[in-house]
Image 1 (cartoon, rainbow over the protein chains, first blue to last red):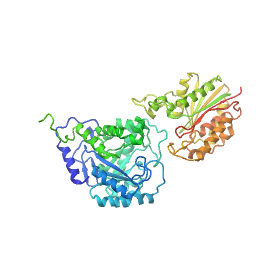
Image 2: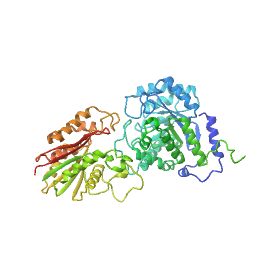
Image 3: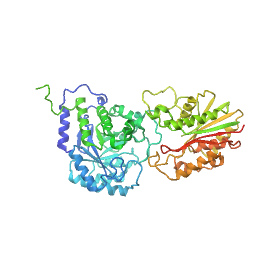
Image 4: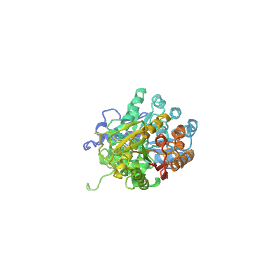
Length: 321
Length: 229
């Protein structure tokens, strides 16, 4: 998304004066003059809902299985998702789950030049990089990344320092204490939502203490990371407790196993379930949605925003003729 | 005097409500119930239950830890739930209608050989007729979709465990390499050792393995060791 569109969207939200009573969860995340979310120079209000498109520079990620491993294919994917209305691209060089070993040097080979190429072609696009390594984070920030998506919950404590140095945003995730790329084995929580809130807020507070802007310290309950399907469903149901912290919230739901197990469907047939979960998170006021399918997600977010009363319908004539 | 021992696994999905609409562990649960029935047929005065856990300690609660692993609705905060292994044991005992005297304790996954041996001896030395139920699992690294992904060493390791259980080979179970067991996510190593030590003097007469399979990438064993008494 370019700055002009960003401003237009924010402005449009602010114009919706006749909005109904605040929805659950959005109540405590009201705008008080300060941006709720800031992505290196771009400011967003509390009602913002941004689409973050996944762009994998991997051979083995669970959904696309290497479809954008080739750099030109990955760039095509960026062009496509931008045309479809993605606000952010999230570039990853390492599959989340166990698989091919990718060391820091190989991860850099996969993502750093690519970030630079995306930055060159899309000067105003928000670029995120999915990495847990501080050394990779530094290299991609130098190449133009705006956001570091640390999917492994601060495993490398140096990553927050890098975000602070570059005025980049940082995603602080809840993994239940797992090491990177570890699947959960019988995870259990006295209260998974409380655990997620406490862990992510603690990471965000640490990042802020290191110099990350509070509006750039994003929290993510990390569905399915260190969690079973029940846990991910409960996090979705009670996402208002995360948005209620007042911090910007990212959710990553797209085609995940909790959707697959809930509906007993394989990876390729989880879009409808993903969009249902997306709608619930949108109702609870999450700000960023990390997805494979941009167009469908954007429609759901716009629809929920209008139901919440924070986005006017695109065109209303019926009954008003 | 130990009169019989049995071994069961303790995946959360043995708690029926946790696997949702489908009962994915029906066969495994039936095998566990058969093992318990065989164990209780030895008419023990006391049933001692030893389950693997993060720490070693006694437990007197009865609450099965369903809500920590899933489900919906309120949590029971009045009572501390049992650790998973003991909770699964409690549920299995309820399902076979056992309401006799039960003593429950956990043994840490990483308990030392000396600690494991001491646990076993304490059970063996009791004067009354004691039946021992042990809960522990084999490797969780038996496939690319297993919780611990694939480590091919798990196959030989688990096969040796199965052989020991089938043959009543206590020394074989005592010989398990703790470091390799930890690498392979064999959370039952210490619990298996307690069973072996408890029957060190008084070996099983007709050891039987009722179940040995890995439907979800984790090796589950169900075994019964009756003693000649």
